[in-house]
Image 1: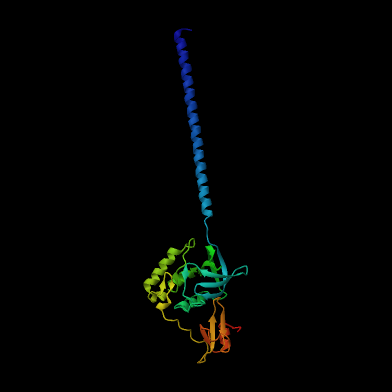
Image 2 (image 1 turned 90 degrees about the vertical axis):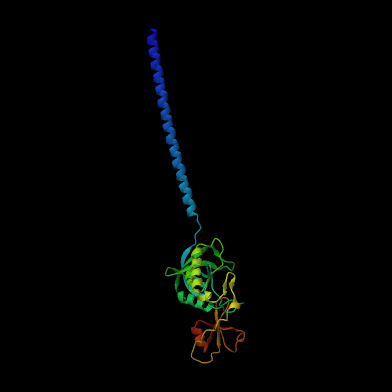
Length: 272
């Protein structure tokens, strides 16, 4: 083999080897690219999974249907669950004037708020109940939003000027912005509790800014009703006759001509 032939063969081997190396490098790069793309897809898939898991773990209030046993006052209601258990419920994020507080007088617009809630949720009617995240208050009462015919009772009381936004504690702030906007409108319109200057405050209702709420008109046809109807702190309707032990110290929400009138209105006779 002469020198030219040897050089020619050497060049052929060199070129062939270089071509193989280039081919192998390209294959490796393609393989690495495929692996990287696969890892990226797995990473994205894991992120989606985490996002979905985070969403599913978000705390939400329970929603169920219940039967109204009785409205205690504007913002407190007693219900019967589908399992037969009875619960006292406090409407979330609102406060209505007192009508049955053991140490406070009947406050202005308290009877109106109570009457509105009673007409909206009569005994035996059904309501949708959405419980808060923190389900109970310090008294053991359920905390919830009520719905009648798709409308939130909490909002309706604010719209009528019969309640103020109050008792705002996280995490139960789901509808806070909306409720505050409704309250602002009622304030601008000066309706209900907002018609009395400085009566509804951030700390409650100021009795010194108002006159004592009037007693409801007597039930019956007599001119001088003697039977006193009172609603105690537990929401029980009790009537007292003149010979009763607690008659003189009882402040009536209603006056009745006969015991039958009182019983027809849902009151029971005092045991003393």
